[in-house]
Image 1 (tube, rainbow, N blue to C red):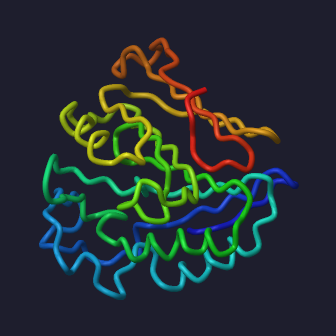
Image 2 (cartoon, helix red, strand yellow):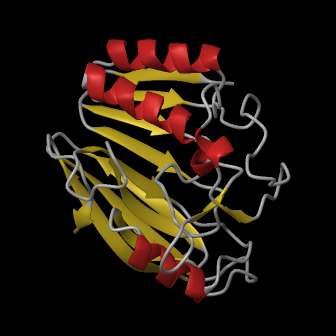
Amino acid sequence: IHERYRFGDMLDLTLLDDRQYRSHPPCGAAKGNAPASTDCEDRTAAGRTMLGLEQERWFDAAMAGARGRWTVVAQQTLMAELDRKAGEGKSFWMDGWDGNPGSRDRLLGSIAAHRPSNPVVISGDVHAFWVADLKQDFADPASATLASEIVGTSITSQGPSEATIRTGLAENPHIRYARGDKRGYVRMTLEKQAARADLFAVDDPFEPNSGVQPLAAFAIENGVPGARPA
């Protein structure tokens, strides 16, 4: 399923499969709809992977060969770290990248090593809008931003609670925007000097002919990683 496409000198598009080859969720979480769990030693065990080692090597080669003005990586779930616990301690959704942080480190390490132009990760499947900086070290807000992430919400499925969104913003300074109460989609526009993400929400997800309203917009400047309000 993973594949690469090139659109002239403007875009290198890499599609990942992070569903078929991932390790079983750690910390006692059940595979599938795994709940958020308290952190444990197994989460950071060597050899855990989100993509499988063969796809990780393939991705590294893709970043080495990227030549477009924009390097877009499309994949299935939130890549940015998301501590879901308010206050002391940490809690993560273990059936995603937070359950396989070593694999995420290797992926972001490939981006850091090969320095493809303007890396942007587009994601979904978490029933909320998220805009995030993908950091070299999520524990250090001052560490380098290696890529930008834009996450589209669900079309009709219910999103996370307002408390979850508030905690996510408060505990994770690399998260720039989050909204879980709206259904809709994201429109990405790529130009030479900037990429723009427009977030749209439908007025009524149960109405096929519902109106659509702009919710927020973010821009990523050419050569400057990190999305900012547009």
